[in-house]
Image (cartoon, rainbow, N blue to C red):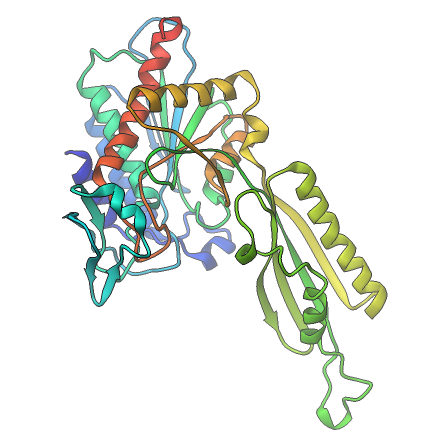
Length: 412
């Protein structure tokens, strides 16, 4: 089975994350993730030399490729996630086309336009995975699974390739708060690792958000309109007054690069009670702390204005910037190996800040320094998602090169 067949096979399994089930503590949140995990386990078992192949009850799949050469080398891990975004829940109908320029008619009236996707110019005369315009492609993160599995196939087929110990893990429900990575929590799994998640060929992530959130409940008082004057306390209007305290330009739609934000994520309720969810994001520890303090102060000011029973709130951390954990020797080794692997494969590294979270942030905080390698895909969480086949192959080549360079040790 080649990397193309692997990826297409994975896309046939619907692994859409289920937000309600995840919020209720069910892991994995959707049965397709278990099904995909079983398929991965079957493929791992078909490869000679792998050990400790396991699918846990919560869906996490792990396996180990023992070292085949002498030396005190660090153990490296590669991670992917099993679920796909809930933005679109339909089954994937993926196809591989040969791109010769211009717009791509996906089908069902959907068109991947060159105007909106100028990066297509970089992939002229390449084979590209697309959908029929009704669903996600699922390259986030099935491209990662295909790249990692293909690397294991190469290493177990050609035993002349020397390598240290390699571990792999595929976790569920990344798309709803990195739940699978949080459940993994196995700091002794590897010395350092890499996720493969997002990004066009050459992109590399070694920093992301410090992230948290606030849940704020406004407690109003309902009353009939006939006697509402002086009695009605409208929690919906209270929530709107509260939102107006925040800087309008510090929102996702008005920021970019390393600019942090407050995101009024969800507002739900009635005149008696309304709940507001806010995402808090910043790249620096100091900026993140200041943003949490701003929310705290806004809540306290509101209580002073409306009374002690008008509002209750909870502010909680979610994940940290992975850069906080890449400054030690192992973290620096992970970054340097990736730089060398990109260069060895003729790939220009494009270091980007990830304006979002990824499993590597959790793995890093739990003791496994973990930057992120590209999968080659574009337009994640959209029916316009596409994946050039050469980029997918390049991702797998980078993984293989990192592994072989570790075994070269001081001879690099």
